[in-house]
Image (cartoon, rainbow, N blue to C red; front, side, top):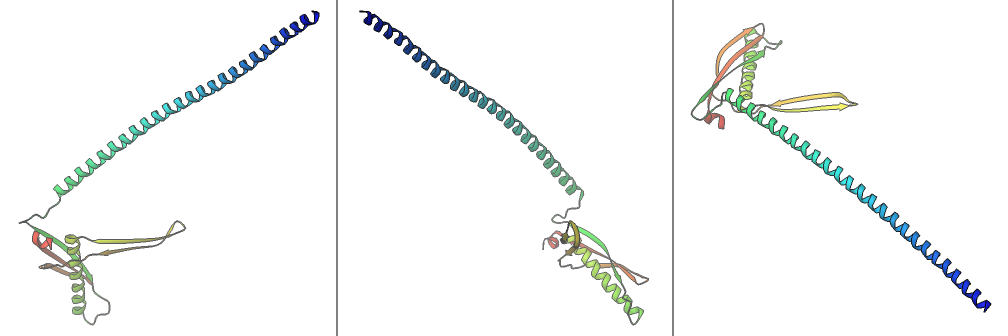
Length: 198
């Protein structure tokens, strides 16, 4: 009987130790679960804060783009107003109307002429050609081509070419002057809408 009491006591004591192990294991699992849950909550809170910051930044970007659009609309309105003012100030060629264009062309007499009459005739011819060019520029406009060659951040070569192409009819020479080898020809033309449209 002694042994049975001893055995009973041993079993009781061993069952008590086993229960402590189960409690310790369960407490460790609960602590791990709580730590993981806290980490997930922290990540969720951080993600929420980042989403709020992103929303604020998106709203600021939207406001900035709206301000930019408003500024562009103002600039566009100002440009349109300026163009309308310029168009009102400029002489516009309308149907059943005519416009008077007057220019002065210049020509220089060459040095190697055989007589003063030849120098005058050549200078006058150059002045007339210059006057025709000036009329064409005023009536049809000028095409400008430019080209710059840059090396080591310095301009090496700069070329500008201007082109004008037009047919000038019925231009009248108003006055011709010749002084000291320079001939000036004043030329004028009256154009109508139908002439300009061609």
